Image 1 (spheres, rainbow, N blue to C red):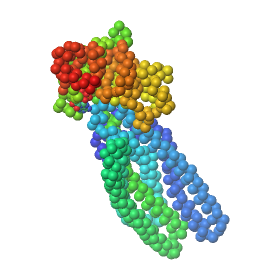
Image 2 (image 1 turned 180 degrees about the vertical axis):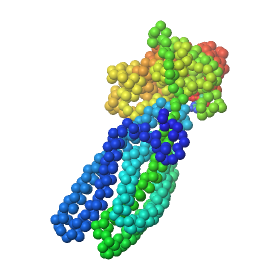
Image 3 (image 1 turned 60 degrees about the vertical axis):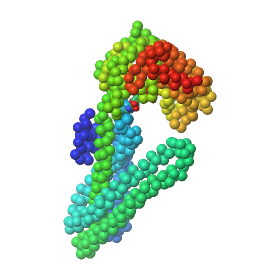
Image 4 (image 1 turned 30 degrees about the horizontal axis):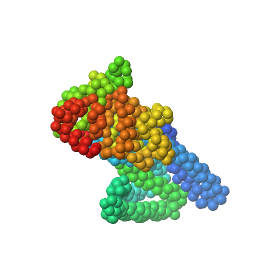
Amino acid sequence: MPHSSESKTPTSAYQSLFPIFTFIKPYRGTVALALFFLMFTAGVSLSLGQGVKMVIDSGFISGSVDQLTSTILILIAMISLLAFGTFFRFYLMSWLGERVSADIRTAVFNQIVRLHPSYFEENRSGELMSRLTTDTALLQSIIGSSFSMALRSFFMLLGGLAMLFITNLKLSMIVVICVPLVLIPMVIFGRRVRRLASSSQDAIADIGTYAGEIIQNIKVVQSYNHETLEQAAFGQEVEKAFDVAKKRIKQRSFLFAAVILLTFAAISVMLWVGGTDVIAGKMTGGELGAFIFYAIMVAMSMATVAEVYGELQRAAGSATRLLELLDIESAITSPINPLPLPHKNDDRKNGVAIGFHNLDFYYPSRPDVAALRNINVTIEHGQTVALVGPSGAGKTTMFEMLQRFYDPQKGNITLNDISLEQLSLSELRDVMGMVPQQPVLFSTNVMRNIGYGKPQASKDEIIDAAKRANAHEFIEQLPEGYESFLGEQGVRLSGGQKQRIAIARAILKDPDVLLLDEATSALDAQSEAYVQEALNKLMVNRTTIIIAHRLATVIHADKIVVMDKGQIVDTGTHQSLLISSPLYQRLCELQFEQAK
Ligand SMILES: Nc1ncnc2c1ncn2[C@@H]1O[C@H](COP(=O)(O)OP(=O)(O)OP(=O)(O)O)[C@@H](O)[C@H]1O
């Protein structure tokens, strides 16, 4: 990417903002038009000073009502032009801000969904979320408003200064001395206010996080009778935020008071010096009026430029973070020239053969402990293999490796003798279908939750999949049938029902390899029978690997792999392992005790 080198070593705020221009480039035409209106309005604003002069000199002083009327009409015409230009300037600039931040948001999200899963173990989702929302919102306000304000103020500052000197040299010298006197306290207080404003935002964000966690876990809070404790703790958080806010508003009050005092003091000095000149006949009243108009314009423009400079620095931080995120390369990518997955006799309905060969794997976050060590397993087309072993043995890790969420440090995994790294990620993941122990439901309706397995599926296909998963009946009984909303704020489903939705999703996907993580929590006999029947149908004509917790599953498996501490300790059938494997015997006793 073109911005990679700049974003790593930003030397100034502007330099790290520079890469954002890649996102602005496509809208060159709009930028040009916006700039035109920006200069147009700046020009009209500057000429307003002349209008003021005319109204005073030709209108009031001349004593002619007609002349006053015509000068006022000219002033109205100028202000109409200003309004006209402002509409387009504001609209186009804000449009640019919104458009560019929308594009950046999309680019960041597109990047996030493709990143390797271990990235999300190192980076909290809350942080990524704030990149997507807060950081992009800041850039939007910079591009859409602050930048335009700064540019306009810059033009007006230059023009205003020029007009000041043209109007009256002596008074201009007073302004040149007074403006910094007014600005210095504004910049100092402004900086403090900004710092406090950002810690105030942090404090508010903390309140949000705290409340969010309590609301999510409200049942735990209530069952432990922690309401009063939580109320007190939350109260403290709120007070902390209030204390920061108090400091901020104090600084702001000082700022306002100082600005009013200094500005009017400076204007009074000018009025006094200018007024003496008017009385002495050295300048007209209109000139003095115009002069004060320009002086205020120059001061305001300088204040705006100073204010925006601070914001630009804050935005530079956001821009750097966003661009760093966009620069990260996913550690798991498709090969440039992927091999197609060959199918035995070209018959897709037979599953695929799987092989683990001398596989060693360490999780990136725990590089010193092997999660899998020296794993060798061969699974034939259409076989059902059960993985058993105590907690932490590495069973789930096997599933993660098969879906290539991580790459092994040593050895490899093959599908029909092709190494996973040689397959395109999309083909690999098309082949795999996973039914997790705790099914994940999205906050949408049943139809879309099942349809996640095959986005182009028709309604009939979805209903058919639900029927085959033994889910149709209970879905029909939901308040709005297939349109019922599931997920976070949706209908609550029982464990068995959720599993059947997940099974329907997998049926619809129709994968060659089925990865099944059986639920450990016991379902009631009826649900268990429904789920088992649905699974049996699902396993036909596929290669299936099951993390097994049920007697029925292991007995019917073609092969059982017994794992412990990341290694395979035994492989065989239920009968052979009962004789040869002490660990398997122990596991059987434990697991099937519970099943009784
Ligand atoms: N993302 C991860 N980062 C670091 N270590 C992990 C990660 N996931 C799992 N582990 C570790 O790897 C080992 C194997 O875990 P795994 O989840 O594969 O076990 P399991 O056999 O599926 O256990 P269970 O039956 O309890 O789910 C454990 O020691 C676990 O702490």
